[in-house]
Image (cartoon, rainbow, N blue to C red; front, side, top):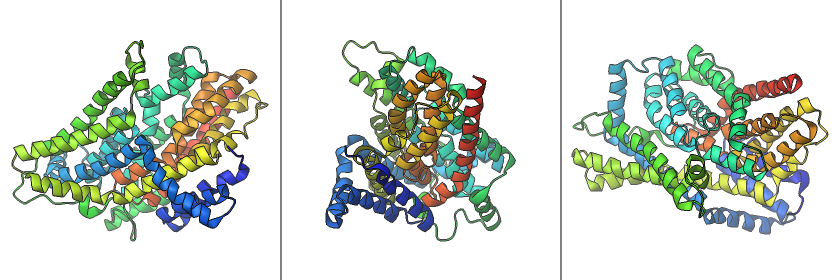
Length: 484
């Protein structure tokens, strides 16, 4: 790969700055992609534009990318189905009768609880939290930006702190390849010092309980509470309100089971599908156990199967109740999936710019190359953390950051005598930072979709909390390094 040096930073920086400044996220992402391929093609405009279009087409050559785009559109179908079946209205009535989430604090804690218990996959966490909590947040006049923040913060940080999932399996595989002694025990030792994930959740809990907001989120919450506007004037939600507010027929009974059962089936199917794909992909002679199955499983396949099963199950459930005939079921599914076309385009561009930065320009490798092996021992963890944050934010991928930074951080820690588990935790926390708040992260995008929030508004309102957690984490890594 040619060394593009500082030019490798131009595409992600341009895309992120333009998106926040102009709120035109599609044009901003394409501008980043186009500029990247202009750099690669020696500023040949025609060649750069042709390469940019080819890069978008090439996204579908990766089966994982295609699965993500398909299951995202299927989620749109599921959202419209549970709304049209009366399941959402029934669930709201159920929570009122049960005295659950009747206030703003209760609604926030319910959303956080859902995100915590569904730790198997960050995308599913966002989707379920948004589907369940959104009607409650809307009823209580809580902003969509706040819901997106809760969805996002209770996904990746939870997944890395409870690593009985694909996240843990991926990190274990990376650690095993580096020759880490007892990777499982080492991963366990990273949990209490994964300061970013912990700080993010503590800040979220504080915000929910006290109602104390900062920056743009404070303005958004005041708008929703005082004016009843769930999102700002001129906002472009990732999924249209006329889809998530699709009213059921007046004669349709409002039953909570019509919302809860498909979602439960989806969650259960994620576990089942992970186990099945893991067993199917096990290398010959490998002993099946929790970690080997997770390591060999396909997360995108599991989620796609889970969402598809939930959609089919919902159709059977509603047909059995006489709520929805086959023709209406298909029409509602197409309406919901069609509403997610903007999300599919956004994911397409996010994948393209991620591939550009990682495989074509070497953005992550360039940033990582700034790390010095001559660092004082107490600065290893904070410097590794900040570098991982920069890579993850600019590339939008936490797992890609793990793959780049773990082979750098672990040897540095051994060389200067710093605790290896602390350096590894710094990499994991930095990767989660980018996955948590980068505009080009798939988790951030899905959080915007799950909450029906304008994507740029979600990034702007969440970023101050992420930066606060990141700053505190960097200081803590330095203090722990000094103490030893």
